[in-house]
Image 1 (cartoon, rainbow, N blue to C red):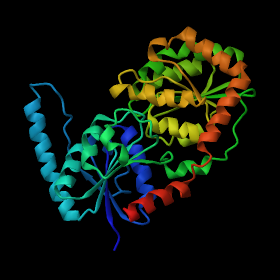
Image 2 (image 1 turned 45 degrees about the vertical axis):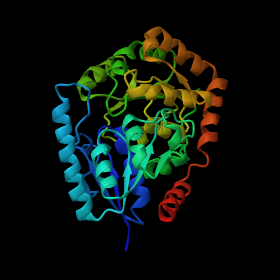
Image 3 (image 1 turned 90 degrees about the vertical axis):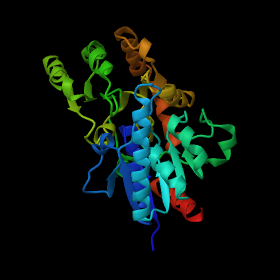
Length: 358
């Protein structure tokens, strides 16, 4: 009889995307379920997965909201206990975020084995709270910060968890940057209005000097405005939203401007697209900056903090990248070095053997 594994996720795409990847790795050997909140459900095709939506409160120090939040948390824990018992779940995998808190507490009460997953270079607040209940924490580096010293023995370092379909594009041949610049602009699941507003003049200047095609992930609110801008300036482009499969655009791109969410950077790195990371300055514990700096230290990207993100600096940086082919190629080669062992089978074997042995 197959073990039953529950993956807890929700919130933003940064939590849901790696959860989908875990599902794809586990679904052949185990019975796999999802729990998530209403916010995270928009990132999953409900007909494709076993899904249970369990509401989870965002815990806050706001004294007015605190009593209500704790009441909602208690209710969520009770719902989770009944769900875990009814489905006879053997293992819980939590992907972080406030959504994982009630289900992990319920699993601890029922003595169900808990594994956590942290894709960022900073241990998230929910995972930091929950790690004392867990058996192990899957992560990408032993240098993860915010980790309590007494929990270091729980780390299991794995290669980047990627959605299965990305491996279909690993050997795709791209245009050389000296022939054509295929620029990808990615704001992440929560969007990046600063990209929509601040990139226009830089892109316009580039289009006057180089052959340019822009793939731009855009919010629905700015779709018409940006489409008009590109058409009016005769710049080849494709606008897309977060729900679309981004791999088809990454595979065509040879340079990217992106936020620094862990999943997006992992996918760009795997498909060897050098990128300018613009970390979201309000990310919890500044984890996006830490993610970006991790790649910068390995010589894989450029980092432009939000306070520096203006037309002059961006135009200068983009021009330097295009003109300085040696630096660009070095970063592309470094991306290949850190990704060459990342195969579906390697990661699949490690995860499944670990779960079976523990």
